[in-house]
Length: 226
Image 1 (tube, rainbow, N blue to C red):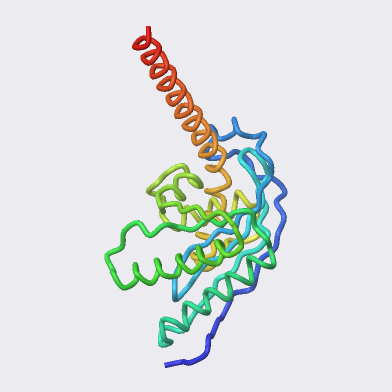
Image 2 (cartoon, rainbow, N blue to C red):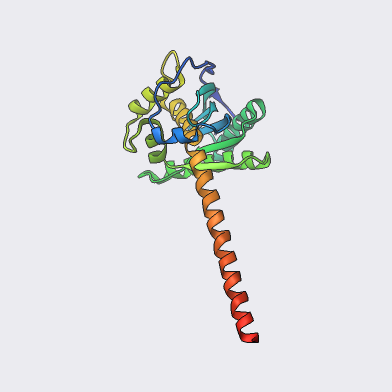
């Protein structure tokens, strides 16, 4: 077993976006007034962990700030592999200073060992973000696919193709883990405004319910004292 962290990465890609064309989620354009946000997207894994940073907002230009894939040796101890992922993620957090971290949620996998490793890597990412006071949001694979391609059943080739187009990349990000990390970041950028507005609406509804209940209680109390 290896006793020291070994991390091999693919070259980081830094490009601008000349134009993104039409958004697959056209209904998100209603939130076009949302300010630009920086998101760190992570496709967690032990053998390969995709990491990407994207700037943008719903209805606005998307910019790929950077994308990378962290690899750890399969014959290394689990603790060593998790440390390697943690070190890489923390370096990206400190270098790019995202406002939120988006992680793909482990939904279901037939290989229990792979699922556990993916979940453990995701936990390491969440811990690193929490230490810096950053919010962490989890998105299921179907949510990510639907956000980027319009279909929750899209395959990896379709996701990669749309990510390349939306970000105006000169070439498709490789391997698929890199494209997935970019897709996760894009998914959060487009879904966050809707989630925030739903949360605000739910909070207002809960406040109205509490006020109504208080008024009913006060009315009932006045009735018993007269």
